[in-house]
Amino acid sequence: MTADMFGETITRPTVALKSLVNAAWGFSEFWQCLPSHPRKTGKQQALNVWAKLGCAADATHIKLYTEWLKTQDDWIRGFMPLPTTFLRRQGWIDWEPIEIKVKPERHSELDKLDNDAKQRAMPSLETLAKIAQLRQRTAA
Image (cartoon, rainbow, N blue to C red; front, top):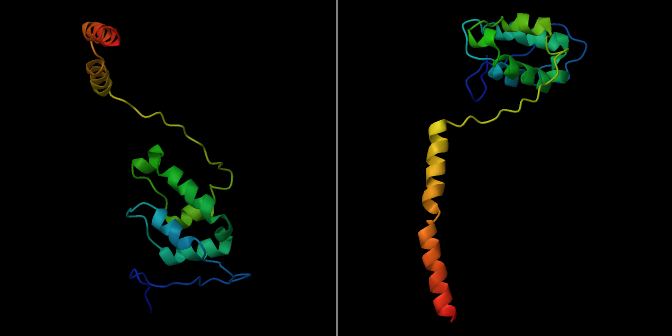
């Protein structure tokens, strides 16, 4: 067996396919996208399912779907199907990417420090009055 530059065994689909052209394209990115988990097993079987279902055509969409799933409660709590089960379910087919607008949270302490800094940067009314008097004297 040969290995790639990362030490991974180079594998090829072992199922009969209509076409071998790019059948495994995108699989390595999908595999890396899956979180480390005890159920992340059966790489060769998952590659076979990937090739058999023609997932290469939807590789980017599948990766986005997987990234989205990693933010969901079930996956955060540790539930993750076997990669072959995940691929056979084809959950990405009906899924549309959701554009999430996240408002950055600011802590009230940071806001207070921000306001304090702004107030310190503003000269007092007395200082502004003295500056105005000095300008009038130098202009005359």
